[in-house]
Image (spheres, rainbow, N blue to C red):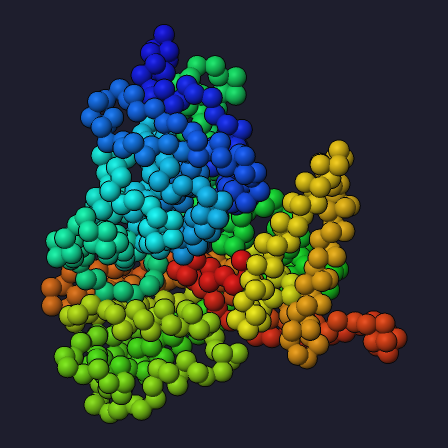
Length: 600
């Protein structure tokens, strides 16, 4: 009886018949890999199905008359954007929005715009009526706010079922109750600019309120935690009653399953990481791992035999430990010791100076003291000498021989240049103790340099997946069953051969590129603290100066070159070609660049 009363109190929208496409969208939002499924549904829906979505009528007969008054006459049409933004926003609430989630959202917005799905449509979610623009502002998706306003013509003054318009929502981001993150601040400004242009909010007032929400904080991108990244931990599947008939129990089951599948393990690729729509099955990850070992020169018997495989993994783990410590120390020297902007006077205590840091592979004890009125590029070290080497010259050095990929180096350069306006001390001492390879996988036919020269290659594997989906759809349209494993394998092999051939032709030397990505958990003893010298406030890390056991997930990449074998080559060399093995390079650690991916 209580369930019936609850249903009677809900808006009449919930009792209206939903279109088939809307039901498909709602299922996709709640399922693993839902964002990709939403995008696929938007792109493949018929014009008639889109018309049904846009003609959906939203009843405003809410149980609260105050809520009812918040819905304007523009409350017709249903959009999948609301559920998509909620899904992406909930995943990043604790740590701020990721670049990948923002990119996914922009893709869906563009797709909806192309299919004429109204940006002023809404959807019921959690018992309230929501609009995409308001939710995007609420979760701090600044570029999505701008795109919805500028491209799609979303109206900034429309409210939702919780009494918020877009300007109000931009200050209510759940990432922090006391201050907005950098993405939230950008969202506030994007909203302010758009509303001012629309003439509904005074510019002076909006900029003043924005300033009140921002507290300048130093930036040192570093994660110092004993716990592994959440995406590496498989959550426990909740026990649900699959035979439940009560509406309350069904809703409870759905919430538990939603929380399970929205965990970082499923939404951020698990051990495979960003760039993968799901963590995939263990056997598939094992196949990727074994193929990566073989590409790196390990024979198949050595891969199959457990003891020889473990010996290789042990040696590689120590090599990865040394590479990590060398990479971090190199970043410190390039960013905080050798290449100093004149905007800072730097006092350093490096490992060469001895002291408490002698037992650590990485030892940074640096104080940044901003100087006023000096914007030059000449370095000033603690002895007063200058270093004429500029950041531009450093960034133009040969990328191939740098231990850290350029985007990661630029992150720390930018962090130093935009640090706290007052004096800050950064203390980082760490030494690797052990390592474990979490995953390895090859990316056939692609490398960073090739994608930079030919940006269209970035969507190579997305196009491959879409091609496979089309094959399955064509088979279903023809009345046949879905492709069997043999047909799927044949399609994938033919597609990969085509990718490798294109890579060889674009490289200029006839060699196809293959990038091997290894993700390694490195266990360290570490001291980390960022402190405001004047106030003594601990901004990051711990103030006791005691070493702690921490884990860093480090992403390594190596580019291999393989010459494609033609018929005449097989005859000359018996069909055997040696792989040209490159150098390992660190592209990311602890997902601070969301994997720094280039292949999706």
